[in-house]
Image (cartoon, rainbow, N blue to C red; front, side, top):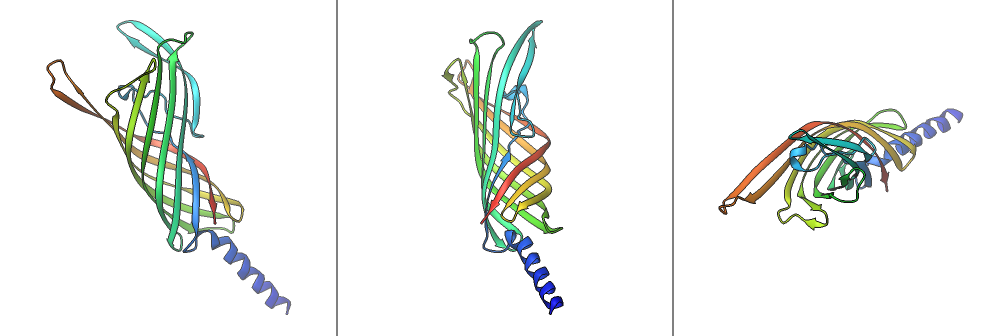
Length: 220
């Protein structure tokens, strides 16, 4: 009798450990969003691994150095549905905010916003009782706007992002996971403007690189 009870206990615990990613389950996730951006795009400071960053930067033009202070916040939010066991699909929204100003003055302020949305897929691999490995891929499109001293840019930049990542999820509770991983992203910023003759000029800034992927998910 004890052996039967022990076997049932193992079966139930195994079912619970895998229930989070069964077909028909929903998940809500909040991860960091750290786009790789160059100064050419006008967006200077990506977030750190926790989605929030602040500090100092400087630029030099014709021998003149300008120092800045900045604060950035970036989040990656997704809502997914498990269409089959371990495979989830759903919408993904990326939000990024940056405040940049000349150091030591309230003048020359720059505020940049990114908002993009798309689709994400994630597949989980069962590991130990409280761990799962995963791989994911996503594509998203949107726009970026910049305000300089309160004046909004008349030509918002067009944004596209494609990324793939892999990592591990730890379940301290049955329906909550802490997610750690690393991802590779290709981030494109397309701008257009008119020259003094009225001709339309378009340019594309492409940024690539690795970024830490840290966040948490709730399953129900």
